[in-house]
Length: 354
Length: 172
Ligand SMILES: [Zn+2]
Ligand SMILES: [Zn+2]
Image (cartoon, rainbow over all chains, first blue to last red; front, side, top):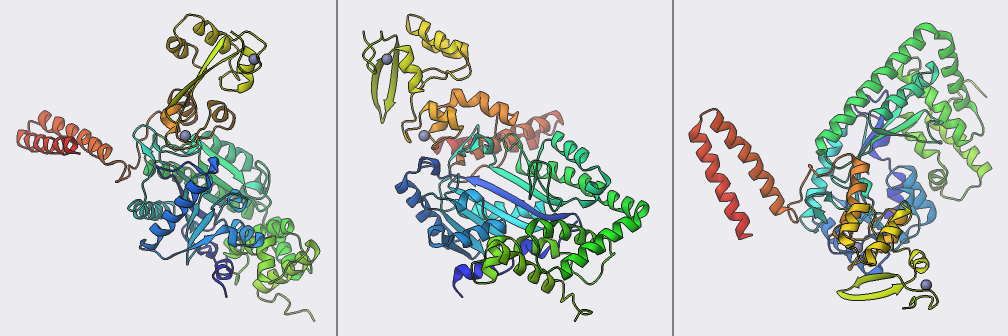
């Protein structure tokens, strides 16, 4: 298997879905934006500059205390690039055209470094569950190690210099992916997300526009990066996440106490459709997997790992699904293959059906 | 004098550009100046007026700080990003851009972040001096505290360390 194929097929660590608060928090990410002092930023499209940046970064990667594989993105197929986006290892922007783009990944796919995206370097660490402190610690370590070889653009007043002024200062963006089906069903979602926004965090629905999200999965991240220390940024968002998790857990208990039949009916219907459907779209699958995960976390359904949502929310997406099947599939074929994959992951599901 | 761009209208705007240490000056009519997009005209309709009066005899530097919006800013000498491009896309082109467009960037940065200065991590390589400066600031506070607590031995010890660091800084 080629290096690229292996990269696509192995599970990313974050998809294993363990870690603190994993009943609500799917993943924690810390990302640093960095630029090299002596070269123009990627937006200027100076090929020689970006070539030299890429060369220096690849060289610096050799000396890191972690083993990272470097992929030159122009060597990858469109499908492979999209699959990397689907598992959150790089941005959509990075999958698009542009000179000298690269991606460095470790074996667990916890560390991913985008080269020549909007900034020369976007160093990302992705953990399952609520592990922002650890994510910050690791990304800081990787940053230190790279800095021994690379000369960063930095200024006393504005800190690390980034292409977009919104990333100035620490260059740090931390985001936490949360699963909020309980708040959605109790009708408290909007209110909670508005509170989160008022506390200064950015809120984004993962599969949808604005505050709508098919799988009730939302990403919360810090808005500002300048003027606070890295630890303060992480502490602030952790405090908000604690509250959100608390509210979500309360909502689920409330549902269980006040609408027990409703909620159990919904969860078992989701299981039924997922286990027996012969074709299914991404949107339908994500919505049902959201219900299923809540059922597992509430111990209504047993014997299925609660990481099912984290895994399948990636594996059933179009590009990844085609790579798993080793061939191109049109939409109708994908719906069939998707249903097969889900059934397999649910452990057969058809014991009683001939 | 006629506008060097259209050769029709009277030139009332002088545009100074510094490209790779070479200074060039062109004279334009207001219309061509606007088209060139070198001026911060987007938000503030008064700024063209301000700049014109400045050119006609006032002090452009003074005018600049008063109107807040910048007129006739030179492009970045390293990456060639023009002020117009920066205004349009809100993106910088290289490390040098930050000093080149510092005056225009400052209010923007303050508006985005609500804070003015970086307080986080400082890189070892490009931040050596700053690291030491921060260390000294911290130690000064320690020294003051020691003095207040009448712990003069400690204060003297910290003072000596500060001196040592300051010496190191000068040698750098
Ligand atoms: Zn003209
Ligand atoms: Zn520049």
